[in-house]
Image (tube, rainbow, N blue to C red; front, side, top):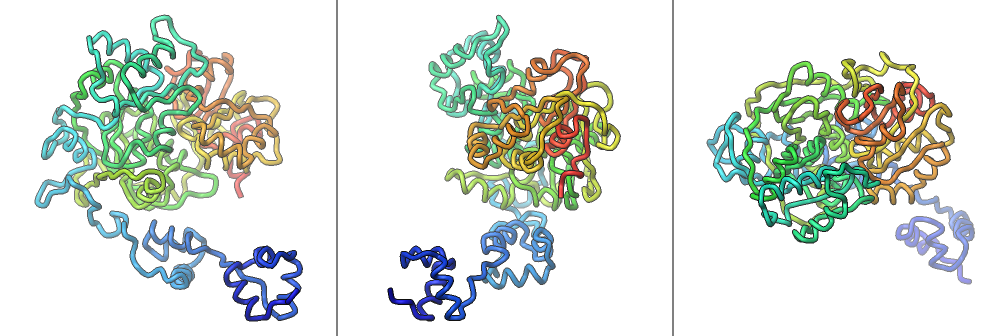
Length: 532
């Protein structure tokens, strides 16, 4: 065999990089290529510490050398050198609104108009009016009408209205994500009846049991888009606000009216602006911010308000983290929660859909009914009591309380990044023998990916029970597995005491990290001991 010359080896190395790939070209073992390279004094290919894709992603997200460098743990000058190395010189196509105070494409923006909030712009568009003001009652038509656990009740109301056909089957989504064992009341239509209704009405978007939780499925499939109005019969529907959607919950009878007529009356809410600045400390996550917001808004009041979330902490969050952040407790009484549309949302949607959308953005000098600024640099892990009057507390105040059950997953924290964090903490460890830990992926897709990455094996080896994707823990898991007088922690975004039949319980809502730390110790624990 002819040994390649030094020039040939250098060209091959530039093209294929590794000795293994070069060996495949010649049909020889990689160790032989290594020998050739050593004899000709050619160094091994040096892979860059940061890929062009990573540098470009941070530049598109922040458009700032200092903040991008901070994300990587390097200096402003260090990041700038990496950017120049990859010849990334142009400003991002879609800068955050806070940077330039310019409007993203928005068909509702009008020169000389009064400054408006996101809620005002979306509700004006969906009511067919040029402008709406807080307190005004308008007739709106939603982009989507979503039902899940109470689909049977909505069908009953729909029938009682004398309606025959749904106004627009393409805008109705039905997800059977609760009570996947089909337990039901005598007065409620069975899953079979719901399926028959779906076929009769020719509803295209129907997800049967086991496919996942409505919020997760709609996020995965890019069905709720920025600037849209989404109405749902689920109290946790505010999660879609993570994509810049105005989403709010209705009663079963109200959603039945929407099914029948395509319209519903709504009072335009006032808006609260909350700016979250800083960087999350070790062991603190989006769920902890959400719990802190719940506590603060309960104190200050947010009844029938639309909440807009801004700040560099929000801009740095992934879509998954934003969904967790906007899954505020329905007990606060807010109307909607939204994070503004930015390049993070744009990149996410470009990967999964081709549909066009028109985001709504608040004007820079909009006047809000209240404004708050929160520094998260010193935030600690939080726990929210779903029973009693404790409310939301720092983990230090309840640490050490014995726990019998831990629930990880569901709509608020059942995505792949949540399961990955939990699997890393559990790997090589076993949960306490004094409790049960239930893992509930948010969807079949999440479950499949977790299987491929080995997370499910880690959960099983650690002593966890892995359940099918469903909303079980919000409704009936605590009834099925938790006895009177026992205590549990959960990552589920469930509302308070009304969602579990046995009120002689203590249930705390926590982050996935706190849930896993608690499972390992058998009592409520600070996750920072397990996070490097």
